[in-house]
Image (cartoon, rainbow, N blue to C red; front, side, top):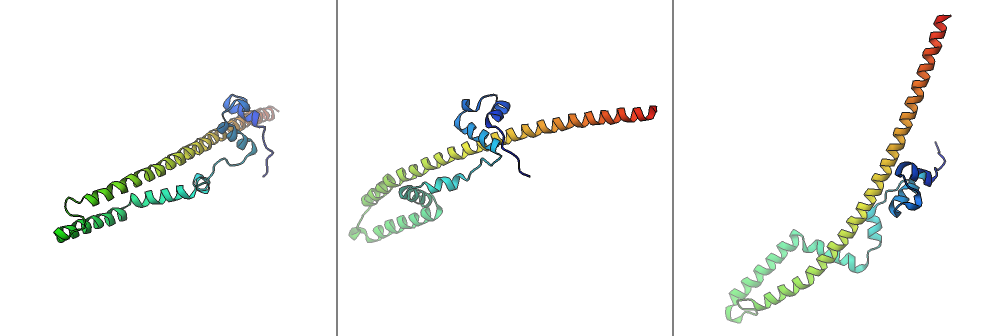
Length: 177
């Protein structure tokens, strides 16, 4: 069954107690979608991923790999081979104990990896804020819809009570005849 759209300002005043133009933008979107009887939810992952630059995608991949068990295991094996090989070679070692070159490599890796991981975390925080905003809109719309349904149920209950009372009166009249 198709319903005609409602007036957004009426919905806003009725359920939020403010005119639509007095609402924050995110609430005005909810009111309009409620009035138009259309969904307000969106797939934040899809929206967010569509706007990613190459650098952002690369930062996410580096952060995903840099924080994984395969990276930790592979890097542990690399460190063990590096130190083991240099200990075995002793005087001919390319990086003899105390492994100064290894320390330089590790410092450079950390200097590059840390900001890349932070970029990825900042993007995730931005995505989380968008997701929370979408959750708020969906929840607000659900509240409005529930209030509207409760009002309809209360109206129907009152009408049913009126009709029940009318039937009782008619039955009482019929019995008195």
